[in-house]
Amino acid sequence: MRVDWNTFWPRIVESTGETILMVIATLIFGSILGISIGLLLYVTRKGNILENQLLFQTLNILINIIRPIPFIIFLVAISPLTRAIIGTTIGTWAAIFPMTIAASFGIARIVENNLMSIDPGVVEAAKAMGASPFQIIFTVLIPEALGPLILGLTFVTISLIDFSAMAGTVGGGGLGHVAMTYGYQRFDGSVMLVTVVILIILVQFAQWFGNTLSRKIMRR
Image (cartoon, rainbow, N blue to C red):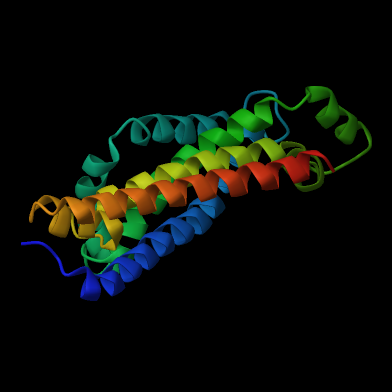
């Protein structure tokens, strides 16, 4: 049964808002967690300013275990934890929780890789000037890695749009839910086409915004 577009547009607008909420909330929470974990990974490496092999190896193994798991499987696998913390496995916020966990470990690896590309001489110079580990992290490492980090977060944002669509297929709401419920299950190609076009527009906007912001920061 085809939808009546005269009355269906509000449903599309609502679903687009849910998708944007999922992506932005996950990006904020995932960035806070991911940047923290990435910084810990870098500073606790052997020979670095807060060397701690036990902590480094624990985080490194945890990331290597979680990152390869396909998101749709990860989403289902941690549903008991999602239910325990969020109270349900259905809805937008129930999708944001697993998306945040999955994104944070990806962001952590991106942060670590960007920090690894910083010239060690910069850190050594800061240490020679008497800077504390806290000062090195917030006045040397983060500013040096900020431009490439924004490009990395742009890549993550586009992945989150993909995650949100997958979450929608198992009750997470958003455009993925609309595409599956009204487009795929009811064989309405017009709904599928509209949702795909909106997802493409969201991806293009995220890429443009990330590239523009990164260029401005790297030219400072």
